[in-house]
Image (cartoon, rainbow, N blue to C red; front, side, top):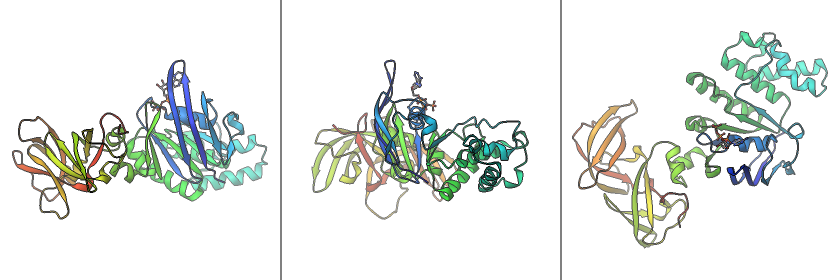
Amino acid sequence: MTADVSIRNATKVFGTFRALDNVSLDIAAGEFIVLLGPSGCGKTTLLSILGGFIEPTSGTIAIGGTDMTHVAPAKRPTTTMFQDYALFPHMRLIDNVGFGLRMRGMSKAERDDKALSMLDLVGLKTSALKKPHELSGGQRQRVALARALAVDPDVLLLDEPLGALDLKLRRQMQDELKAIQKRVGTTFIHVTHDQEEAMAIADRIVVMNHGHIEDVGASSEIYMRPRSLFSAGFMGEANFLDAKVSGICAGEVRVETALGSAVLPMAAFTAGMPGEDKSVTLCIRPEHFRSGGEEGETVTLGRARIIDSAFFGAHHRCHLRAEGAVDIVITAHLPQTAEPHVGDVLDLAVPADSIVALANGKGELQ
Ligand SMILES: Nc1ncnc2c1ncn2[C@@H]1O[C@H](COP(=O)(O)OP(=O)(O)OP(=O)(O)O)[C@@H](O)[C@H]1O
């Protein structure tokens, strides 16, 4: 069984501090959702409200269409998997995985059967009689996942479950976690502050900051069409350039920047259209700078001189200083085949449809 989750205006105040501020979110049954954001942004608070470990100050939580706001954790169709996966050291894996089933009164034969099938799911069936200390960190993590899934939760809540693993293992476990989630179809809600992890596993990412949601979408949507400056900067690298709207005409918007003017399609304004004279910030991803000769409509924002360049395999990472009176440094990833040299002067040319324009300072245009 899987279930949809509906969070309505959830707020949590600790003393005078709003850890969660009017958060609303709908999650479809079977989705893999990642709550992403910096330390202290309220991810764990939201997860704990879903699991029933914290009551919201206001707002409601429904799971599978049933109001769960004041229901005790054990009575919810959720299981939480924490970073310190707390396996019982003296118990064999089969007994660790079957523990929750024993608590629910299932017979030994039945729970051994179920535990074995769960260990099979995570590739550890042949280790069923081992004890946790005989396993690697990644294997222990998989046992914890098998144990969490053994009780057939409708929704699995995962709080930085891969945080204790080294980078290589973490990347491997991300792939496994995603594959297992797709196989079992359970709704997964996973907390992390690692944007690469979010991109690797999520169907949809929820970007959080200061207790509220900044952006929600598939990783490609958030990366290509961010709806807030915070989200643009948190998901990958971006150049930010201040601009002012100077004209709106026939589906296009003219903006003035310190590097010159540009005409952008309306679609560049992902958080809504500004009025004339409004200040905005243009977000330009480093890989969108062109080294010349490409087809399609481009915007040229003056010229700039390469001040350093390093080869990163798939691209050259360059810093360029804008020519002219302003002191603006741009990061650009030029194609592998380009041959950038320090001192070269290039046009700052980007495809018009790759630029995103957002209100200064926050996600909404005023
Ligand atoms: N019981 C509590 N009492 C007071 N403040 C709390 C409590 N729990 C959390 N907070 C505060 O609420 C804010 C959000 O905490 P939360 O644990 O949800 O953040 P997080 O995004 O999960 O961060 P991290 O990635 O560091 O775990 C933090 O500033 C934290 O200090």
